[in-house]
Every structure is written in structure tokens, then in C-alpha cells.
Image 1 (tube, rainbow, N blue to C red):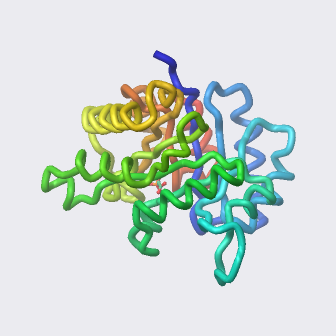
Image 2 (cartoon, helix red, strand yellow):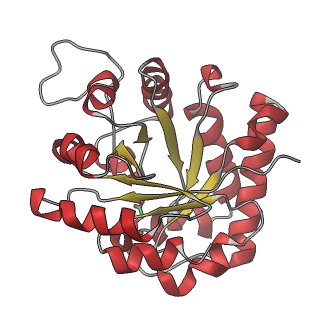
Length: 247
Ligand code: PGA
């Protein structure tokens, strides 16, 4: 079976000012030679300057969301084409903070993924169950349902990744057991194969939620884990590099 190239992406969320650009530079300098692809997804306003800061390094810059339309009367929104124009190469879509806080449904996430592909961006599509859903034994059904609903057919043959992020593990310091992560990642892999065929074996399935240097090796070497989506620990070069070097 083809192994995906691992992807380790930092999600800076609503953190970071222009003064944070040297931190991105330190990440790029420290991860040269990593066997993972490394990406940083800063707030949109930093994308252009971060691309300039990281020019000539292997670190990719990504967005955290994109609208499904290319342009138009959508006050406050940013399109995938605009992110690409600013230098972004990837975009996080359907993060649970947007699903919960901004009402994003699977159908909206799928439209955003179509727009991202049309703009030449590589989507990182996020899925994950709440604590209530896990406690009710619904985690596998919820997450595989999100995969089916959020990934458009256009992804076939294109570069993309799925990030499994249990909502209860994000920013809490809690993580599922390795067995729980492997069970979910295997279920996501089976769903991807069903939807897109064996060609999708090259799409990494990332784990996200309280990844830090101390737990990175165990998570990154778990079966079917093809990298990580890292929030808090991606803001400081030392922490993020500790995760990248665990691979
Ligand atoms: P965390 O966030 O690493 O701070 O838990 C992960 C994410 O939300 O992508």
C-alpha cells in the first residue's frame, strides 16, 4: 500500500501579529530536513508576509477557512482564490470551532472544499465527535458521516488530507487512547477508499487535539496516523519543532 507523505500543520487560530513572523522563521529553520511536510496556517492577514518570510524554505503556508464563492457581496469573508493569491497553498476547512461557532454544516464544508480545489489549494478537512457523541457510542458513525458529507467527489485524484479532531480533545490537554485514535483513523481510511478508491491512500489522515512534544511520537506512529494538526503547541517554535522532530 502507498504510504502518504506525513503532514504536520500548525493552526494558529486567532493568534499572531506581524511580530510573530520570526517565530515562523525559527520553525522553518528548525525543521529543514524533516520527512514530514510542514505547514503553518496563520490568521489570513499574516499569510502574505509569512510567505515572504518563509520564501526559500520548505514550510508551506495555509489559511484557516475560505468562503465557497470566488468573490461577491459577502462582507467580512475571504475566498479561496484570495488565499491562493496571497501565497497560501493549503486551507483548513470545517474546523469544529467553525462548525460549532459559525454554523458550518457538512454541505457547506463540501462547497468550501470545491472552491479550495478550484483555487488550487489543498484542503485539510476537519471532522470529529463531541464528548456526548463519544459517550453515547456514536463517535464512529458521526465521524464517518462527516467524512461522507464534507468531502466532495471532486477530491478524487487531488491532494487533500482529513484531520480527525475530537472536539473534547481540542485545547483541553485530553487525548483519546492510541487504540481509539487507530480505530477512528482506520474507519476514516476505509471510508476514503470507499468514496475515492485506492488512489486516496496517498491522502494523509491527521490527528488533532492537544498534540504536544510529550505525546507526539506515540500519536504520530499510531496506525493510519499521517501527521498532526496542531493548535496551541504550534505557536512556539520550540514546541512545534518538538512535535515535528518526533517523527
Ligand atoms: P490544540 O488545537 O492542539 O490546541 O488542541 C488543535 C486544533 O484545534 O486544530
